[in-house]
Image (cartoon, rainbow, N blue to C red):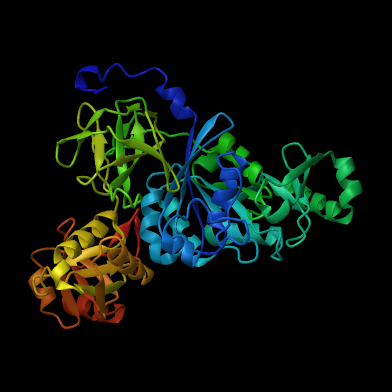
Length: 541
């Protein structure tokens, strides 16, 4: 059914209730903290899958659902974000798994623009690591509530109180543990629920591929079974009470405090407790500010924003899919939406829900849901789609690149495929593609946050677009935004080059290093050289 402006005012009455059932969140962490494994464990405990995979699948244990790209499976790292929809506890959980590696930070930043809450995953032995700190800065800038999950408690690690102190001292986030481990890191016995004092003893299942067996005990039973470990845990819980480390909803939603849970994702310890906290405490979708700063009520007519583009998920069809976060209203498959950037209609006959690489047709969606629009060649990251009177959400900022390389087709006879592939990867945000009048269209400059992005480009150009490329790396490490008036003077400088970012037309100046930049700024105080920002956070040095 097509929905037009004539019937926009008649919004279904269940929108507010359905929005209240949604929890849309991302998992953020440093590489190797166990993010994809936790994502898999959450899906297992919510009965969305029958057995959990592993990042490095061994024996009969398959790979994780969220790492579906061939390169992800081969390297054991997340390269692109993945969306998973899970029904649990009467709620719809929209889980967005993000790349942990710093080289793919831009994809993670885009995902954070589409969620209402984040799970900050900490390695019990390493605590806060550099990439986690950077991603938390983005959450802080967006005033996003953060739930902390201390992972790998089944392995040797640090003292729990020491980890909590690090969180508070280094990032100013007040930790409020919801449960507490019995047994030191590496000797994980179970968890004390601080709300009622009950104890859940954890038992492994073979290989950790199925849900851990949880045995509930009252304090008297726990004391008899766990003995000294129980006494120590009880002393630590009492200390938490004395220092006032209690959950406070207002400070949590304001991004000032963080509920903390302990567990181990690989054997599925503590995962059901995390799910219960997500359902009970994580915020439901709220009014989203539009480009003018006016809140768009969740009960208004349909609106949504594209936060991710992905091509060739289905090798048989070579399609292009736009991932859209629903911000308001009820979506119905078949609606004719308006593309805010062009004013043109966009048909939604082919709309799907995505679970890793698996797809299913979705007929309705509500605020907080993620829908995938097929055949979305006209859309780009940050675009707004709506029904009725025009609405447009703020653009999703691009990340500051630090690595640059000139791309050329190895086979000039496949130049059309080369052009199409480069343009596709630019629109997906795999890399930023910069055009230069000096270099010409046949030699675009690829700009990346990290060098692994170039590996992805080379792999996809060869295997998806059948247009192998060669890369010549450039000796630049910084990008600054400039304007047309400053461009000629900047281009004439030694150690700098002016390029035009093709996707949005902005002028960027590339500089060799920060020391050269300081000299240029000192000698040319009138030049416009602005740092690039992402999510309100400066993204380069």
